[in-house]
Length: 350
Image: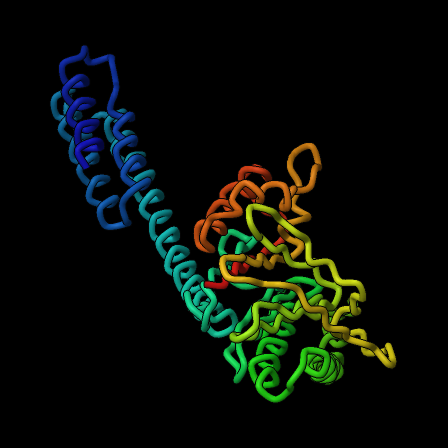
């Protein structure tokens, strides 16, 4: 507040001390303009009123307020100050609306993408969601984890498309996974059940999409993991999703499937097989799950983000530090802004 007040005092003092033909009073508009950058409408109005009083004082010292010049300066300062105060009120209203939108977005994220606990049985867990939009907290990327009788099951996926339709598809698949993960013994059966559930969801929402002129193909790439507590292995079923990375002994291996399955939502395909593959996952190893928003992120030269090469430098980091390194490095790679949502999960067996 000292800055606009200092401007008022300095401009008034110099104008009063100057010859009558020198008019610095119009510069007093700087005071409310500066105040609007950091204060609300009431404080800006107070500074504007103070500036108008200073203009009146200047007019008294320079021939009285009856001159046309001083009357015009006072009137102009009043009008400009009123416009600045009005701008502050509009900005405050938009700020309240933005705060409300953020709170709703955060509540939706809490419901859809429930924060993963730092421990799931013998697993140390960390997760991160990087939204492409500045004020968005949720999108088409999804992940969830749940404890089952023999261990831990996880899903990470990426819904094709954007907007509310993608959020709706994500919400349905997450809800189906959290329920069905407890009812099937193996991953192929779980994947088949998720496919059936998602196809029913697509059939129910298709009329609404057509009504709004939306005819885009909708599907979800997904990766299912089954990590038993008693065995040093991880079982995976990959449905068109990028394969996970295994960090073991300072090395990084790509757990690429021999028989990848199609994405969930390919409802026209018959006799779809969902093979399961088993990999070693020993104590001290880390598995990194990610969506294509990571691997398809480009820099200014259009080069993709080299996730496997970069992760090798942090292979011994614990899950929270590993995700922190990747996040900062990825933002630097793209120049500060992602073009697509991205999700990351790091799991270490302890």
